[in-house]
Length: 438
Ligand SMILES: NC(=O)c1ccc[n+]([C@@H]2O[C@H](COP(=O)([O-])OP(=O)(O)OC[C@H]3O[C@@H](n4cnc5c(N)ncnc54)[C@H](O)[C@@H]3O)[C@@H](O)[C@H]2O)c1
Image 1: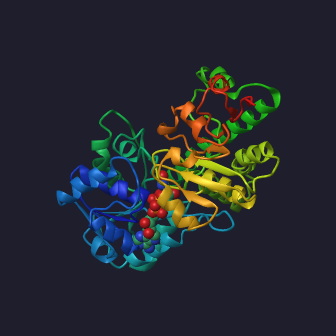
Image 2: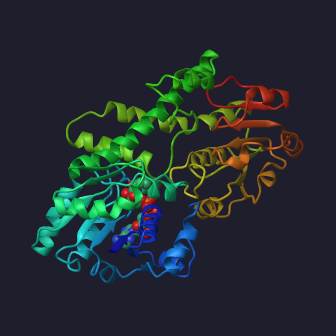
Image 3: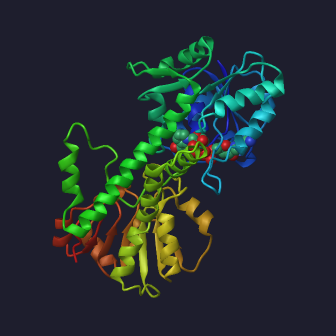
């Protein structure tokens, strides 16, 4: 099938590549010429495990193409996927300007039987509004399907190839059949394709992200309470997780959720609720708890040093919002960096994949040292803060660390280490929701 993917970012590029891998002829479009130039040269603008190999293979087979020419890509396509960004607007609502720009540009190019597929995360009612806009522009009843994406950065290829489920919102049986045919190769382990109304499909994506965010904010609030009571959130987590009604997933305390989805989708859904006269109290609380959680680690550092950070050097391990990606959008590490810079600290930063993005954001700054290795970052540091649970941080050589650091102090925002072990290793150790070792 001939497919155009508009927006070649984390979702568009993975979607296009995975669809090309099963034999479709895919053209990925982006309005950013630098991105398309890189892709055409075989360079991948983002870090996503396994993506580079698959792009190289499908492009070499002649099934994956890249262009900035929206008209040329969409005119011959049976399916036009829209995977442009839908960032938060200043008031917390969803900024759909990129989506509307694309709709207006493609209207005069798409064929009578083209199906427009909304893959971007968009508020309920967008499918209906896009359908109406296309009718206005083309004079026809164009098919518009909703097909929200559930992939996770860091495991995106696997998630796309073996999804838990595929959700599609359609208005016509024929459109359903085309999408079922397209997704069949990815559903071979009996995972379902869930057909529903466009409105339900749009809501499903937001409700999923809102519930996952709720779990994170809930466990973070409980972790903070554990700290005040002498309980250990890890023991509590095990105590509740074995209850089959609760389980373990997404109940890891930490420094708050980040990334380009949870923060904006919780606020976007709250904004949809407010626009319809519903007070979204749970969603607002989830967001507020998360905002506060992002400054919890900086608060611990500030208290440990009695606010005297002007002559202190803090190493930071982990800058991406989660392991397996170079994405720093809304990353808790950025909140920590900003706060510690405000207090005058010098920071020695290390992340295995996100250094270029962080350097692009902060530029050259006397107070920021960009390091190439974890050891380089902790050399001479008064403390180490851990913000992302990259696997390479899980088993460090604590003796080496003691030798390299000016003081053996760790602020662990991801609860990577066993507090008893840290006590034996003679570290001062702060984590989330567990008694500090001082
Ligand atoms: N990143 C994720 O993990 C994830 C997961 C599921 C859903 N989503 C949703 O998917 C959508 C895309 O997210 P993303 O993370 O891939 O964003 P992204 O910012 O990585 O990519 C969006 C791309 O769209 C391009 N673009 C913008 N306007 C365009 C235009 N007019 N014409 C052509 N290209 C244009 C941008 O240049 C960019 O490359 C969002 O709605 C997001 O909420 C993201």
